[in-house]
Length: 435
Image 1 (cartoon, rainbow, N blue to C red):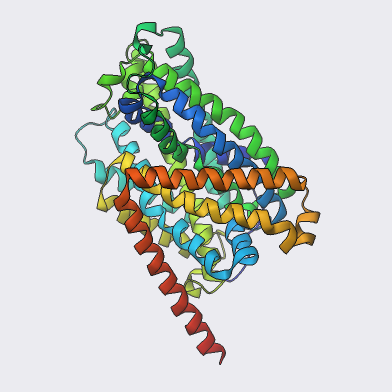
Image 2: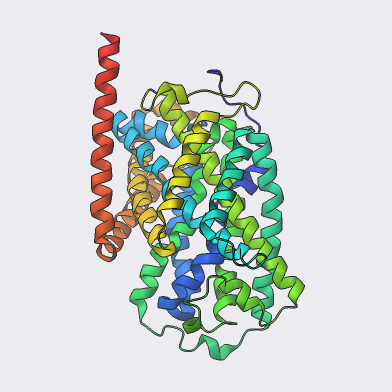
């Protein structure tokens, strides 16, 4: 291992595939069925509602990635514009997400894997796929991004086949009543569904490895989100128009079950394979992004400097990959429900989004030369409008989801307090060494 820097190997197509693979991933095969149990056939409306703050997130990530084209750029902007302690808390929360998000996706992989090989222990299957992705990321970004591109093509094709086929075989009776339990469950479902959009931050996390980032990052974000919003509307609509929403609750493979109603067996198998590819791309994206966060924190002295090493042959932050992988495996061993994992993850994301929104809002005044030099920027009115809406949406999500999951809020506050204590100890250690 050496202290070398990461190299720029990601071009525009690879960046688009990276975002799509990370954002869509397995959740579109897993969450719609779980959310339809409460929201009913209107679950597709929940996904459209969730797209509104997701579009704001696209602008925020495009602006930050263009202005600060470095790996871990969200940490960098929070640290430099707000405060070093808040920058650390961003890293603290982000890296811990590996123990929440990876298990959710890996268990989804295990559920769909049972379509091919039933009877296997889901925990062992989940940990096996995580271990394979750890190895792929350890071997470097070129291997990981090439792996990502092939898988994304496969699962997009599977989703399009399911979505279009489902709509052409839709039963209008299954969509009535559209809103069986009122609007409240739809709003909560929209907040949970936002988790499915949240992965757009991945492009800012690997910005230091993107070619021509000022142009590539904004373009990749908006190209990918056109595809993402289309699929996130199409799939839930096709699901609830071919499978009754009240029968979905106990079904872990709702998309495959629905496809069996109107597709030949070989296509059902292809849909199941698409779910596996989507889950693998999500785990791959998590490993890419969060390992860069941990690497950045270690390089800044907030985590042990031992982990700030680049592998001399593979040019990957290998030790950071292993740490994130270990957290992912630990979270998988802990167990937990898919919706519960998603809601706790969304609460953490909202806290990080508030910090990010305030940092971007202050960027032009705190670092005017950096914002002026950015290839992609907005006028001050548009910038303020986007940032304020982004912060407001995030705060509302915290309040509403906090009322639904008060235990998660308490746990989150305790976890943040532990992070603050760690930061104070690391700063004191650094000061003592300097003295």
